[in-house]
Image 1 (tube, rainbow, N blue to C red):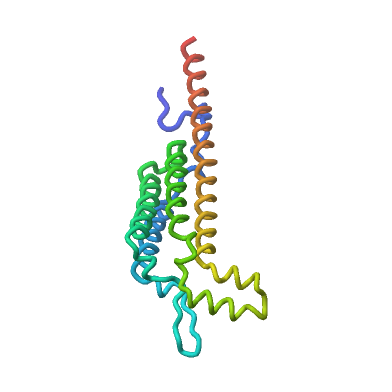
Image 2 (image 1 turned 180 degrees about the vertical axis):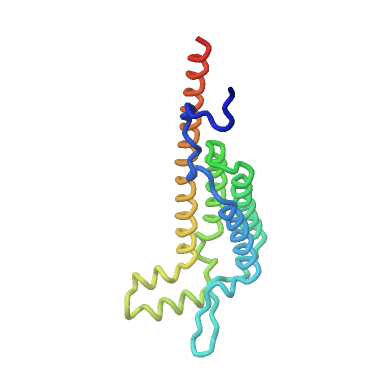
Length: 195
């Protein structure tokens, strides 16, 4: 008589839940990348604003941000991030290929971000003067850090992309190892069944 249902002797491990991800992560990544680019290119004045006696001082120089070269780099950054996030949706689980796509896309996005954010001229000169004068009596070191919000954003961006790349690589290679181990177990069961 044939059994209906799973074989009680089948001891293959169930797929690990942490090796799959929800669709929320890549969809949220796509939305964040697009919104960040639109805000940064379209409305750089609202990213950080300082009010001094009723006067508004934007943090970033909109003219520098809207230079053609910087626009192209920001658009490339978004394209690389979209490529990574879309590959998440296509793969649906962590794999070596997803890890490789993630690393390449994140490195290219970081290169674009570095070219845009490292130059000092991206920060509005009045903002720099205000920060230096405000923090001159408190802490020159702290004032120098706050006068470079472009580098603060860049460091945070690189940190997040680095953590993502490490996580995807770790889980992708772990999933491949588990799959290879499962394939070896299946092969040994098949050869044992043939003997």
